Length: 554
Image (cartoon, rainbow, N blue to C red; front, side, top):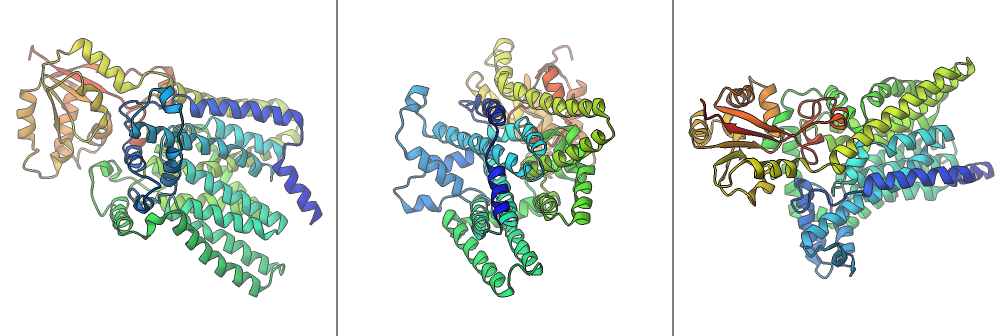
């Protein structure tokens, strides 16, 4: 027991000065990537989920009980309550920043919390890696610092970053429990399961791991059946009670209705416009071709597959419960989401810490194998490629999304210089990207292209032709509609006919503007920001905007 205590202390403390210095530098670098330009998109704030959450925060007050019962969609309201608490604290910061709008304050608080928990996740992933080796810890940390997925989520005022932090912390605490047998680590893990579930109720599934670990202790005869049963019963009751306490919204009828509605949407039984791009997608294959190459970069995505099976093999062969637990966490967070009809990019964010740890463990083991065969040059070459590629993708995304001018603002500025303010503009419905144009152009018609193939009497090829006849310009604020229409001609024949003719410039309009894609953009989106990844990978923070002008010569 004394040895295990020393090991826990060595894992959780930086015992060498140069290690502490290096970690400090890396944390400062990661803080820059996560906190820089948190006010992106101001004053329009284009992320719809973020806007819905911020609307609840802005209307909440700790002086009324009803505020504790407010929520949004099928999510818990713990992060909302946390943001509301921060918002209620008087501070001169908003005055210094020139922000007097409650909604904007709420957006920034939510983004600050996302960035904060993204930073807090980093030492936890380092501590987790140290259970295998210090090299593993540093490599997993480097993967995380330059993670496109983590940098992006740090700039979104949504719940996914907090869910990732809670999931990884549960894993870390269970490792500590298995190492030390100290029961308070077990109950701390239950606390973080409750906090995570108070943000997203599906995280309750993680309670299976503490129970399995207890049963393994019974099998090893280090715990009696009676004590294990007592802990299991207490675990289930405690997690249920804490989850409801941290997220009172769960006890409301609104949550139940929202959950039923959300279930219909994510399973595909309820058809909505923003899930049309998932028609025909294949579970698991879609995530590994259209999501993970963006969130984690293509190289790590390729490396992860053999690394995962290697770790499962080693875990079974050596009876390494830590490695098997790591793979189990990835699977339990990945599989339930992978087989849903709606396969949004954000669903995969909580799997990233476990993905990075698995890749780091396998990579370090491979380097040890090379070292034994005196392949030092190959070892350092592979290490340089791995770290270099990971850093290049992270930095490229950061520059593309948050250093360069917002693509919608850039398109609006182009339009002000090239489009007379009184001319007629046709655009797409349900896209917040058109809002910057509203202040400069007052004759914008929003047409529901989603319903062109839904047998709607209001939106048909004939009504579209009539609208095109009286429109001087067409502005597409993002690639959200056009991507599915161009790729799925059989499902969306009318939409395909319109968009294919528009881009072929055979329907009377010629393209005069497309969001430029420089080298950083080409790296981030694999040379194609429209078709490379699942649409929500960049439709909120860096969409491609197209502008077409009526060809007067036709």
